[in-house]
Length: 223
Picture 1 (cartoon, rainbow, N blue to C red):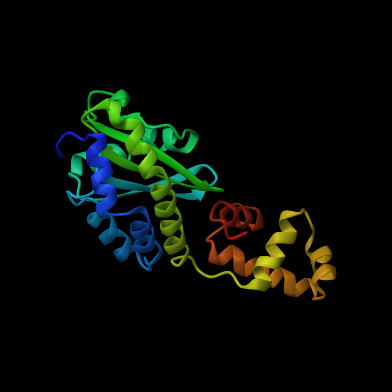
Picture 2: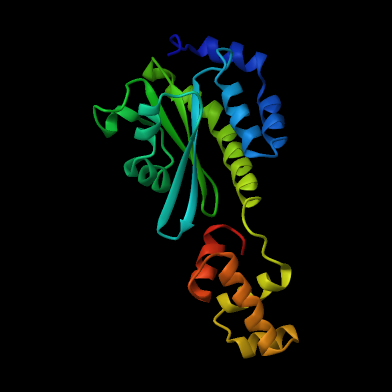
């Protein structure tokens, strides 16, 4: 683990690796491989405190998938995938010492959840020897974590089967409780065409019906 962190260390390192430079690198991320490499780069000794990143994907409104990025042991990765971590990051935005979840978790590792928008959240891991530095480091890393979350959401959407504009329009009106006939009148197409587009959405999202397709598209920020 890294040496003790002081306010002077934070200031010096922020001079070396400015906020704008980090954000620029995050904005240039195009693939998950790029994202993984960037997280590893942020683990460099010249960057204060950063240990790793946890990404969360809503599979359904009640199902959440976690993925850990960073040079971490398998044991720690498994701990970070546990439900209590997911639940805390989903409902809270305050930094928390991991050992508060139990003795299995390492000391001096802090979890900083971040919420970047509707169903868009993640967390960064910080190694902090001196609890007095928690506020300083979280102040520095919070906005960067927001950019990391948005970058991961962007590349995650690339893996989704694309929903066409017309399919999205049908889903949006279905969200408003409109029937296929009512949607056909609004969009100026046949009811059969509306059902065709909605059936495509059901198939593309691997859903059982239009309600489940709507729910999956909402949690994935497609609609």
